[in-house]
Image 1 (cartoon, rainbow, N blue to C red):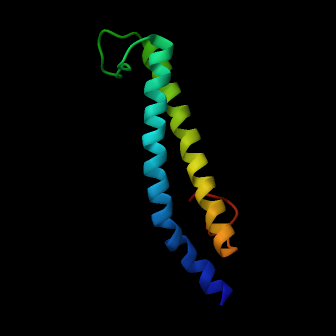
Image 2: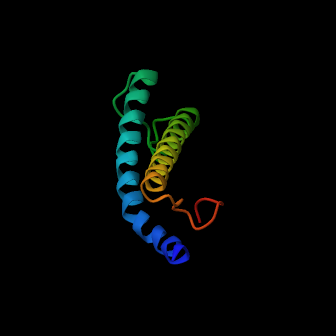
Amino acid sequence: MAKTKKQKLPLVYKPVGIVLGLLSGALAGRAFRTAWKAIRHEDNAPDALDRDRGWGEILLASALQGALFAVARSAADRTGAKAIERSTGIWPAKDNSGRE
């Protein structure tokens, strides 16, 4: 019985993970815009194809955005996994290696 439950749990976790992922992406986007405004005092971050921006500015914006999105995704994944484990007693990943 437990083996069947473990096989089906990742499917149950998928919708939770998707919702948490969307929320974390929105939160990370807002955090990035706030951070960029605090760092550069500009409303818009540079785009990689923006001719008027230098390499340093483009790479700084990309690194900051990537770091914030990675932290938000990890926090959302961990929060969702812990909530599933608390409610079912089973860790939602197929094995202990984490994401596929």
